[in-house]
Image 1: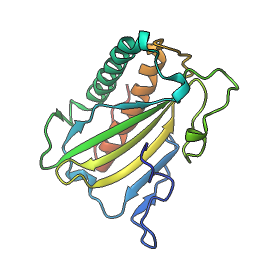
Image 2 (image 1 turned 30 degrees about the vertical axis):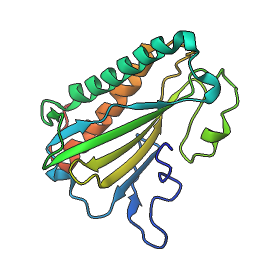
Image 3 (image 1 turned 45 degrees about the vertical axis):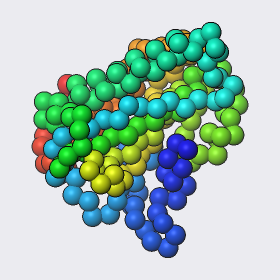
Length: 198
């Protein structure tokens, strides 16, 4: 589903629940009105999901490798978030009071060659996708209630040619670090802290 509500109507019919935020470093950001994000002191991260065109599904012979790559990608994403946040916003494995939950999914079009057609399933989405890139689609939620507080989407900056079981980990890591740094800068802003520039 890839957060079907995101950018296809970020509000209920007739009721504006989310406001578009002008964030120059991300393609799309919507925040729920009236949320005080400064009350969230720690972070819970869901295991990321990856969506790719049906034609790019791993072969049976490479299914184990694909599963291993997914596990590595999940661990890498969590590590990048932890590296960016943990000195001020500790990670936790359990929902709780003042815990912000991050649910991220990635659209993976690395297997499509330059100039290749984007599958209709993805081309209909309002967020950007591009052959050779991944796109982050993320929700921030209250960890106890599950209430969605914000939604965002962003096209990865690094072209990463991929295929059946082939991953350019340097490119993926650079995108993950970029998004983690944006999250840290934003959290520091809502908590009125000064972000240290590395």
